[in-house]
Length: 257
Image 1 (spheres, helix red, strand yellow):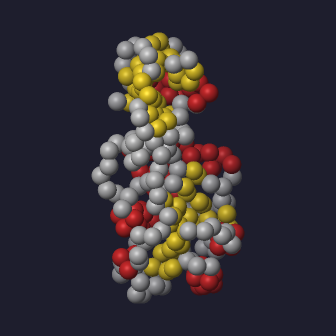
Image 2: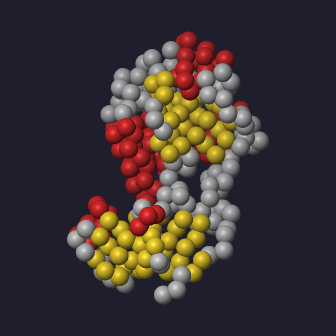
Image 3: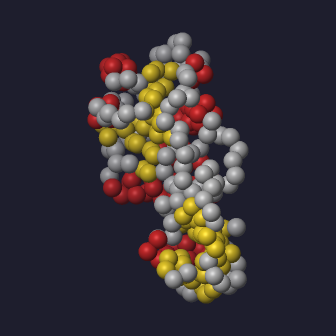
């Protein structure tokens, strides 16, 4: 079943309207017809099964058949990623979304080559995350946050967060050595192509981040991020098979035809 995000303001009276590029995609690319069913995500965790009623050039009208609710459950994983060059950051955001990160914090460090992201870039990354959600059937997208300097990130204080950073100079501790079971949330910090400066690593340790190694091989920055995300999610138990969308199953709401 095809999936689309929809503005919740366009859902009313048992009907939902798909507009813009998605509407054109439905009519011109997919060539769907009235009577075909879609899944619609409103970005807040509500999932609608809907049936196309009419297709126009700039909008597609649907009738809502059912609604259910998805809520992410702890332990949560937050990615703090030093800015990467070009499309590397796009790739990390896409894969972090597929692997279930709840938010993505771009971080500016000493060895970053990429410039600090503006509002347009953050919006673009959010669109990439939303598109990845449609592909991997994730109804609640991660939040792509505005960029922060590393010093600002290290100064944040949040209770119940287990903080880890992957550091090429760490020679003994690995992710497998960490006991993450009590964590409600884990923040995973990864550096840019040039790694962390020594004083940045020292600052991270001083502010409660535990350094870990990803092994003896030198990984590309984007590879390190994807590998670390997958390993931490496995250690947190977030890669277990569960009923689709129903980690905490609510009763399904049926809408009249």
